[in-house]
Image (cartoon, rainbow, N blue to C red):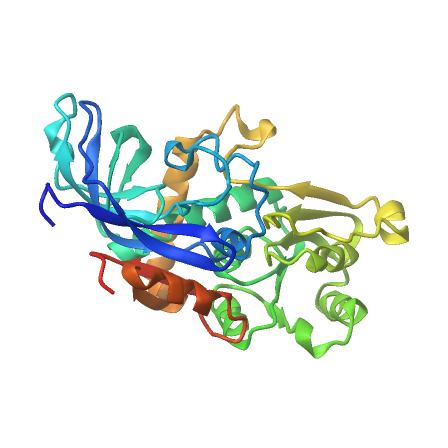
Amino acid sequence: MSDGDAGRAVEFVGPERVEVVPTEAPVPAPDEVVVDASVSAVSAGSELLAYRGELDPETVADEELAALEGDLSYPLRYGYAVVGSVTAVGDAVDPAWRGRTVFAFNPHETRFAVAPDALRPVPDGIDPETATLFANAETAVTLTLDAAPRIGERVAVFGEGVVGLLTTALLARSGAETVVAVEPKERRRSLAAEFGADAVVDPSRYDGRAGVVDAVREHTGGVDLAVEVSGRPETLETAVETTRFDGRVLVGSWYGTKRADLGFGDHFHRGRVTVRSSQVTTIAPELRGRWDRDRRRETAWRELRRLDDEIDVTDRLVTDRVPVGRAASAYRRLADETEPTLQLLFTYPCTN
């Protein structure tokens, strides 16, 4: 793709309506670079909310990421896991940036101009497809930091998508006595075991919440910590009921406009259960004296490399590679609950 070429971008134009639209050829400002995308990862949780029309249009997209400025109203360009190469640099930018492979928190588009400080150089030894998992790895690190697991604790992870699997892997090496994965899809339960879960529970085997709670308690006697990353609001109450006295529930799911019908009954009230949210944009107040974003991101790269060395994480997580020009069909596939898709990647340059 030459410097004068225009590009294309994925745009959500309405509920279940996606278009790939032309964009002007980016010209870097003096303090910017141009990135040509090679691959980008679709975040099933967040992007399906946009696809299904389950986001509050008045919500700010992300106050910390310049590429996601504005609100969540249609038309919307959304996404935050692009890997590509720097192909042009502004006059005030160190020429050494040219040719670097970088990760960008940017929507899905073929070419874009961006400030270098918004990019993360991909460490040597990490290939572009693995690098697209960096945002998910950083989320998993954030969840683990916020969960603060203690040695000997019993833990349940609800939802074994990409973030759930990476979080399971981190919790499994945190000193927890038992990590239970709760996931209805068979392939994901198998992966959870590979990623370090000591036991798996299939919630689809049971008619109601009580059966799932009993199954988790059979393995743990009640969990000290439950991590909810299924993206399903109805799962939250199940997670609460699996806890033992003074248990903790960490909610990593973003439900958008979906409502969680949470009953604060006897177990919650008398059990002194704590429910807390976790979100990767910020760092928990109690950690800010020791942790900043750079330290967290360095940890995410290190853990991603370790997992890839140990179990070839990319081969296990990436199920679909789709040219970005076919984005509309890709989101339809991702939204189909019967499909086995786990991590879907868009490939570039754009083809139809």
